[in-house]
Length: 588
Image (cartoon, rainbow, N blue to C red):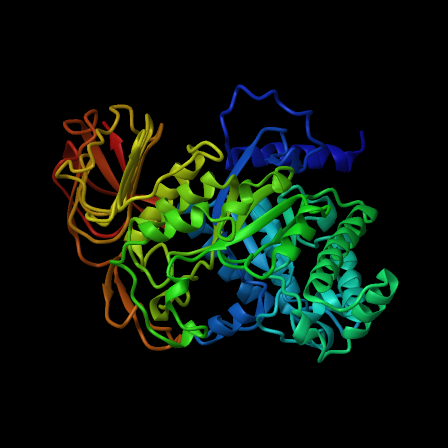
C-alpha cells in the first residue's frame, strides 16, 4: 500500500464523524470503499461503505459573484482576504450543523481563453476552501460550470451563454481542458490532487444546465449539427426528432465528461442537475437522456413560492413568511412533472440530491423542516441551502435567499431542526403535508411559527415552546440544546440563538447577539444600507433547567480570546444574568 493511498484512507475515515448513517441495518453493507464516496444501486455511500446523509449550504468564497457582494462590505479581492472570510464563516455553518458545502465554480474566474488554469485570488480561495473543509471533516461538492460572475479571460468561452456549454464543440473542448487541469491540480494547501481528495463527495457537471429548444437552435451555428444528425438518421425535422436529438446529445455530453474524469483517475461520483419543480414540462427528453447516462446522481432544487414571483424576482420585494404552502408541497410531491420523477424506475439506479433549496422570500421558523421531509420522501441524501449569507454582509442583506447564524436566528434554528429530521426520516417515506405536522421526536407548526426536534441527547426549538403546545417532553439525558426563546429546558430574555452543551469540563453556554431589524429583510439588500443590527452588550435573564444543574453549586467563567475569566459563583443555573457571549459553568 502506497503512502498516499494510506493517507487518503485515513482522511476518508476521519470524514465519517461529519455525516449521519441511515441506520438501516436490514440492508447488507456494500464492499469496503477505497476511501471515497460512491453510488451503488441508486444509493450514495460514504468512505466507509455505509449509506450517507449530508445537510448543508452553498458556500461561495471562490465565486466572483460572491466576491462582488463582499467587496461592497470592504473585503479585498485577494486570496488572503477571501480565506479569512472562509475561515470565519466555516465556524458559523459548522455551528449550524452543516456537513456538506456546495460551491458553484465560474471557470472564467481562473482560466484563460482556452480553459487552462490561471492563478487568481479565486483559485487561491478555492484551494484554501477545499483544504480547510478537509481539516474540519466537511464534505464538498462543486459544480464545474456556472454563469455567475464571469470575471476573467475565461469569459471568452465560459461566458458565451449556458446553452452553449453543451451545444458548442469548442466550448466543450475548453471545458474538458479546464476540468482535466483542475482534477490534476495538486492543492498547495494540503498537497492532495483534486482527483484524489476524499473530502469531495461528488462533482456536479453544470449548475442548472440548459439546452436550446428547437426554434431557438435554428438561429444559432449549432443547427448544422442537428441537420447532420437528421441526415444520418434519414429523417425529417420535427419536434419528435428534435427531442430524440436532445436526448442523445445530453447523454453523450454527460458520458463524455464521466469518461474524462475516469481517464484522469478520478473516482468521485458525478451529478447532473435537473432544475426546478416544473422543469420536466417540455424537457422530458432531457430527463430520458440523463436517466440513460453514466451520471451517478441526479439533483433538483426547491423554492416554495417560485410560482408566485416575477421572472426577475431579485429586483422585487415579496414576503411569503405567513403563507401556507401545504397544497404546493402535496401537489408537486406527487406530480411526475414536479418531483415525482425521482421515484420512477428509470432513475432507480441514481442517487438523488438537492443542489439548492431555500424558503424563498420567507423568514418563517418552520419551513426548512417541511422541506427536509419532502427531500427524504424523494430519496434525497444530500441537500444544500442556497446560499449562506456571510457574516461580513449579513447585516446589509435581505431578499429571496437569506440565512445567517446571527441575523436570522429563528430561521437558523429551524435549519438545525431540519437537519435532524432529514437524518432521521427513511428514504422514500410517503408524506402528506400539512400546516401542523408531527412525528417521532419532532413537530412542525405554522400556527406557532416553530419546529422542534428532541432525542435522547439533543433538543432544539426554533420558537417558543414553554407552554407545551409541541407535546414533546425533552429526555432527562439531553446534553445538547439549541434554540431561541423559552422552552422546557431554557428560559432566555434575549432574541439571539443559544447553544448549550454539557461536556466533561462543564456546561458550555454560547449566546448569540441580539438582533434588531432596522430595514426591510424581504427586499434585496444593497450591501451598504443596514437591514439588521447586532448587539452583544445588554445582559438578559437566563435559566437553564437541566435537572442535574438546577441546584448545583458552580463557578461561571467568561471565555475571552480562548481564556477562562472568572465571573462569579452560583447555586444552580435557574437565575443567571448574562450578556451575549461564551461562558463555561463548572461544577464545584
